[in-house]
Structure formats: C-alpha cells, structure tokens
Amino acid sequence: MDEPAPDTHEDGTPLRRGWTTGACATAATRAALAALLTGRFEDPVTITLPGGQQPAFALAHEETGLGYAQASIVKDAGDDPDVTHGATISARLERGPAGSGVVFRAGEGVGMVTKPGLPVPVGEPAINPVPRRMMRAIVESLAADHGESPDFVVTISVRDGARIAQKTWNPRLGIVGGLSILGTTGIVIPYSCSAWIASIHRGVDVARAIGLDHVVGSTGDTSEKAAMVRLGLPIEAYLDMGDFVGGLLKYLRQHPVARLTIAGGFAKLSKLAQGAMDLHSARGAVDLNALAADLAALGADADLVAATRSANTANHVLTLAQQAGLPLAARVAQQARDAAQAMVGDKVRVDVLVVDRAGKIVGESG
Image (tube, rainbow, N blue to C red; front, side, top):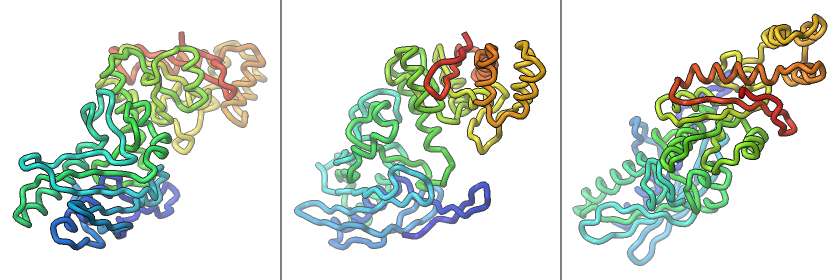
C-alpha cells in the first residue's frame, strides 16, 4: 500500500499517516466492481480522494461467485492509535434492479443507524456521506466506461466489526451491530484528534435529536460514572469529551441544549478554571501559583500557600486543601463554570462537578 506523506509529532518524530475506513471501502468497491465487469481484479487498486491524492491499496482477499464479486483490504491507520487499524474491510458488488441506482447495504460488522441526529437517516447502514459519495462516483464512472447503467448493490462489511465497535461511541449513538464507515478526506492524520471531536459533535446531535435538554461532558471514565450516579440521565446524554472541552463548548454554542454539566478530575478542571480549553497534559500544566492565590483567598495560612507553590501535582494541592478544611475544589468548580459559560454563551446553562481519583464528587459549582 502506498504511504501518504509523513507528519511529525511535537518532538519532531516522524509519524506515518493512514487511510480511513471510507477510503478502504471505496478502494474495495472499485476492485470488486472492476472484477464483476471485467473478470479481473485490480491489485493494487488506485482511487482518488476528495483532496486529489491517489493512493494505491493492496488486496487482502478476492472472491467471485454467481453474479457477485468481493474484494477486501486491511486498513492501515498509519501511526494513529485507531481501533480499526488492521481491520479487514470488504465490498461485495452485485447488480441491482434496473433504475435502482447505487444501493448501500450493511454486511457483517457494519452498523445500522437506529437514532436520529446522525448524518445518515435512521434505518440506513452507518456509511457516512463522504464515503457514500466516493463509492457512488466509482460505481457510476466504471459502469459508464463499460456501457452499463449504475444499478448496483454495494455491501460493505468489516471482519469482527461488532466487537471492535464496542470500543467506540457507536452503541451510545444508536449505531447497532458494528462499525461506521467514516472519513471526510480519506486520510488519517496521526494524533489529530479530529475523529474524537467529530464523535463529540455527533453525540450532541443525537442528544438534541431525541429531545434531551441536558448533556454531560466528562474528562474520563471515573468522572463520567460519578456524574451518572448523581444525575441519572439517559445514556445518550453522556459525552466522553476527554481533553477537548473547547471542542464541546464551541459546538454547543452553535447547537445549544438547555443545560451542560462538565465532570472531571481536579487537575484538568483547574486548567479549565485557568482558561485552558484543551486539557491535555502536553498542552500546558496547572498553574500552581494560581491555586496558591485561590487558597490564600479562602483563608489559607502562609505555610499552606508556600506548600502549594512547590507542590508536586495539582492533586497534591487538593489533598493539602482538604486537610486544611478549605473548599478549594468548589472554588475551582465555580471558576471552571465561569470559563465554560463565557465560551458557550448564554443559551446553555453550565455547571461543574469536580471528581477525585476515587470517584467521589469533591466540589461543585452549584
């Protein structure tokens, strides 16, 4: 398989880009249709991506039978930690009724959409619009080259896709039975986090579409579980935002719900309180001097203020504050709420829950 141009990590280490499930499905579709029309598989098979790139894909499996052809490609996500890296994506092509056009079906391991709010209607295979356009263009072009009408059934499958999908947002988004076929450019950029942010957006879309007026953005599993116990909302209300609070807030500003709860650990929410909208540790540390000033405002003595400035971690500061009986976590929750409220605007009411490592809510904005 041809490789896209390398990218680099923050330390300058080269990172290899990869291909989306949509690009792999499109390449498999071209190979299978070419075999159906000519009796010969293209291997490697080349496609044109939306940006004009023309990658070539090696076939992992070829199969023909009575009225159909099927080709498979193993997804290469490059150096991105993508759960679908190494998945086998297949396309089966067969002729459809006259005038039917291109019809997409979900094979084994590809999910079906069961809830509104996604880019694909309820009852359709979870094959997103850009991959559909890419595959449809391939079918129409090859059919025209061979003097045929573009009436074909395209069945996309992913080996072991139902199991892999349990590691994704799909079950919460109402995509049942397997993975989604995704991609807008065809290229996976390592550590770009675009897929995670897109999942946050789709989670908001689904929550709005089913009429929820309260969503929860959590920084991790521990804080999400604490929020679930406290709030008791439907599962679709909970958005695993990770470090991307800014991505969630910006989207809610344009696509509001009545109420947002942010739940997270003390260190990450201290960064939000201090104005950070990307909470990853690599994008900046907690300002211990600011926490020292907060404790001074709460009545801490000079020794505690000094200890805070030289503390090992933000969670060390939390422990010191709790030992002194000072409500630092609540103050951070209030400041984090104010920062988030300023970002999201006045159409969404924000509140914040600070959760410790044991899963206990230790501060809230009220």
